Image 1: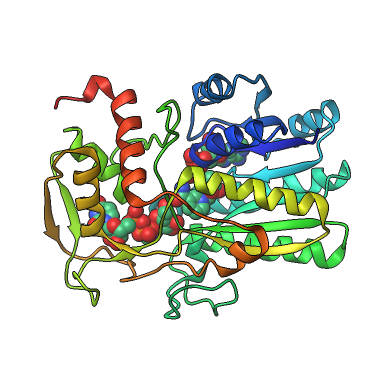
Image 2: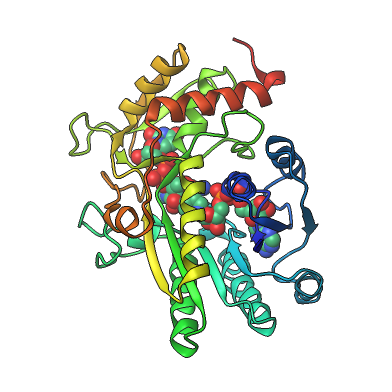
Amino acid sequence: MHNILVTGGAGYIGSHTCVELLNSEYNIVVIDNYKNSWEESLKSVQKITGRIFKYYECDIKDSEKLEAIFKKHKINAVIHFAGLKSVAQSNIFPLDYYLNNVWGTINLCRIMKKFFVKKIVFSSSATVYGDSPEIPFKEDTKKGKLSSVYGKTKLMVEEILRDIKKSDNEWSISILRYFNPVGAHESGLIGENPKGIPNNLMPFISQVAADILPELTIFSDDYETPDGTCIRDYIHVVDLAKGHILALNKILINNTFDVYNLGSGVGHSVLELVSAFEKACLTTVKYKIGPRRSGDLPMLYADTTKAKKELCFCASSDIEKMCKDTFNWQNKNKSKYYKK
Ligand code: NAD
Ligand code: UD1
């Protein structure tokens, strides 16, 4: 059985992927510095799967600790989620983001190389396409201008991994560009737990529906889209997690360098998401129309042909299911704030 090191495994996408890895009979070792997560999510992963695994509080920048973990466990491949992900914060604290996301990944890869572990799946983002007008985005779409440091860290890491592969063909690398992950595990035991007021749409909607926040502001309805609100490609986090297993299976067998879009391939507007949430969760979401948010693109969604063809990837959950699972998680975990 293969041993997979999962960095950032206590986080939102990491914890869901741990569940899928354990359900697919992989062994896992998890490291996380809990900067944006809690150890409890790993306990919940054990509860959901009925499987025990080792996890460590460890920063990917901490070479000594990381080496000790590689020494102790025979690792076959790494799934690398660990990273800071706030677009706004990245522009305020660029050094922290470059240090953590770029240098952290370099450090991880150096240690992997030292221990002859040359297989990695990396969490990238649709944000690397920048403001490219070629919608839907294909993996080889010419990239537009990037407005955030966060996006630049993802693109830099992609380039670093590409150079590592060029220098040593024994590496096997899969870069996954996520679109908009939402939803939660059906059990309601793991999900996304944004600190403070959420920046992203789905957790915002969910907290309005749960009376934690008074009202959603839709960032404008004057875009050139059918209902005037922006269109995005939402993907259920469990579908996304399953995509990692497919990518991992491939890098373990082949010596490869691949980039894949992981999205549903379908675009939904903000208003569509609001009404899907109301319908799926039998609730109301109070909203008003506000001004545009700077940097927002009117429409983006994925061309998923490559992931479908080469990985047999299929995002099967629709937006109703995404909304239902989000609200289930919300209600099970925010009960002290829940008034409705
Ligand atoms: P998350 O914040 O929930 O998970 C990231 C995890 O990494 C957290 O548990 C955090 O504590 C940990 N971490 C951060 N820096 C670390 C370090 N130096 N050492 C060890 N652990 C560290 O975020 P997520 O939504 O699960 O995202 C996972 C990855 O996917 C990130 O790299 C993110 O940039 C990328 N991504 C996320 C989205 C999204 O919308 N959620 C979209 C595209 C890409
Ligand atoms: C954001 C990030 C992106 C990240 C993605 C998934 C920015 C600029 N980009 O993209 O890097 O990969 O999340 O996590 O932050 N909206 C509202 N009201 C709200 C919140 C959002 O109307 O309170 C709208 C936005 O204008 C957008 C849509 O909802 O049109 C989705 O927003 P969001 O969830 O923040 O995702 P992205 O903008 O796609």
